[in-house]
Image (cartoon, rainbow, N blue to C red; front, side, top):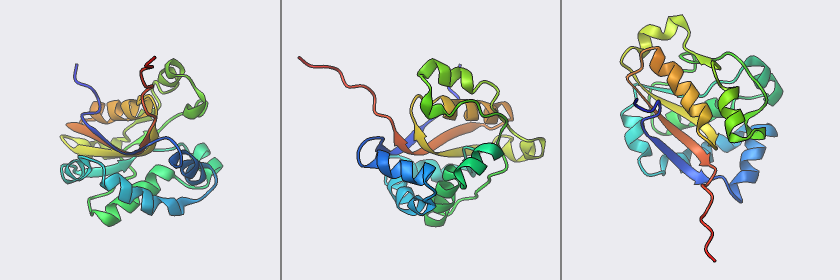
Amino acid sequence: MEPAITACAVGVDYAYPWDRLIARFKFQGEPGWAQPFAKLMLDAPGAIALLDGADWIAPVPLTPARLAERGHHPPWELAKAIARLHPRPLRADILTRLSDGPAQHRLARQERLRNLRGAFTAPIESLSRLRDARVLLVDDVTTTGATLAAAAQALRAAGAARVDALVFARTPAPRERVD
């Protein structure tokens, strides 16, 4: 079976100093970080090719409750900044988040996967836009890839031909220990 996400470009590792700046961006109401973060995302290897190949740029959605809690939508802020720097059609309405369990950043890998089952759907009015479309999902942080995979599966189930991702930061893989 083909993976839900075909390709993913990432701007930086989720490590110092980016981890602290991301926390300010996501949790402390500082959406102004979107523009400099978007510039770094566009510098990621393969990012421009993914953008140029996309029919739509779409942020990973938040539920209304999570949006109210944060006061802004970090992936949407990033997607808008990316589209300003490298114009592509932008859609925030082709994917909906149905449920919010515990915040993903507080969960272990297996819990993250379970937490996202059935969390996303494509609204019926977006199905015609998604048929055979190439969608570029934008997110702020990926750790296990569970959120991106769940969102991409919903888009693919709705008819998207290809789903790629562009993410600001990725949790680095554990390094092998050398004694």
